Image (tube, rainbow, N blue to C red; front, side, top):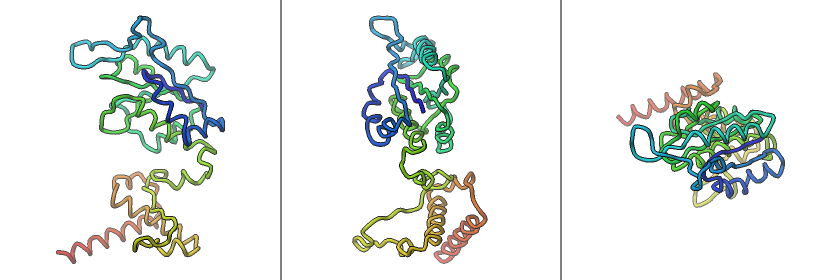
Length: 251
């Protein structure tokens, strides 16, 4: 996969892309990454990428001219046109499902905003606009790093164990089940005995039920879109029955 970024502070990617899975992905040739500096497409001695907003107001807006010039040159550098993503607070909410979609694209280009925002005309270049959530970051570089990490870890061979990504939170629309490792007992807290039983079928059932239980308790909104079996629905119904009985006992 080819991933490229266009921003005013490309050096921000250095530490992230040179460590852990990002480094491994590049060493394995699963990822070809390059960060472009938007200032390379400016034409004044101050390398200006922003200006005051029309209509007045606080802050500075990123100019559209350097973005268009950079986009044209970056696109033309390779035969394959990139799927272009803008990071913006007004974008679609980023989810694991979106990460999966992006991981299937052969070439991605992330355009990162800064300052007060980006000239609206630049968004005509976008195939997709994404937002991490209902909060504001200093720059789009930070948001793009999160998206890139979520995407790259889905590429074949990057995690090593192909089942690792499948077992994680949100892969099937649910939160991940509780995880434990040695020692079996620590400060009075014990690992659930079923995990030490060696019965893989029972372990799988326990994990699924714990995933359902955790999701119902912490992120019940996810259940509406989750891929649930009849057994899953029956288990969730039993949880509701237990909760109802407990509340009646307390009252």
